Amino acid sequence: MEEEEFEKIRYEVEGHVATITLDDPETRNSLSDQLLDELLCSLSMAKSDDAVRVVVLASSDEKVFSAGGNLSAFGGDAGTIDKFRGAERFPACFKAFGTLGKPSIVSAKGKVLAGSLGLALACDLIVASEEAEFGTPEINVGLFPFMIMALIYRNVPRKKATEMLLLGGRLGAEEAREAGLVNRVVPHAEVDAAVSEWAGMLASKSPLIMRLGKDAIWRQMDMGLEDALDYLRSQLAIELSTEDAIEGVTAFFEKREPEWKGR
Image 1: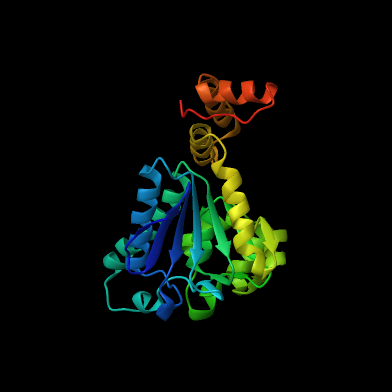
Image 2: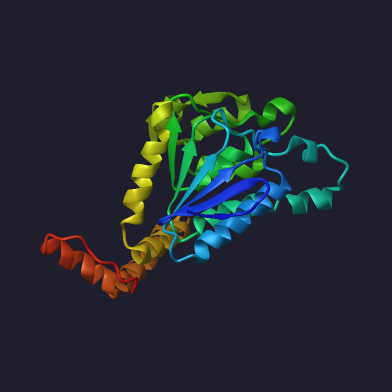
């Protein structure tokens, strides 16, 4: 296993899986500028590492994934312009996950609150413990979850999303799954195994085709239907010209496992 040294996160690569673990227990993994900068750096490393095919986002705290944004920074003496510039780290992280070119999985064992819900929704898949909770409590402290609103409305039906934002309540894991926030809910002791299972499945796919697909998901998300269909037709043509697509189909008919070439 390879490890890189950070202060607020842990970055480890084992096989084809890079695990980024939020690790700032004194603040319950609050999303400080430093933590977000380290997260951005680790995502850049994962993106540029050809050996990495999957990224897992986890927490060192079994009860709290992250308490969300750093409230002390929000209430500080910095001027409006400084606060505006400081907030750019959130959309930068969301975009980094969206343009990673590799699938990402969230291991949600505890409370996923406020800004950290945005991080989770920016990832592709969420595996949650039965004990996990998801919520947007910002309104309760005189704030509004502006930075994560767009992600919530792209994952949750509008009335439910509005309920979350306005009431500031929390959803249990199963309720979050029913609302479209979570893909899979398992007993707490089985989260790591479930994440590893999906990570292994994702890592076994063609990394080239996965990157094409991931990029297309990001690009077409908010296109008009006709523009999206035209764009996706062009991506299909590119895909069918790759050696991996030919190898995958050939292996299927020959009843064997494909050998990906990345071309």
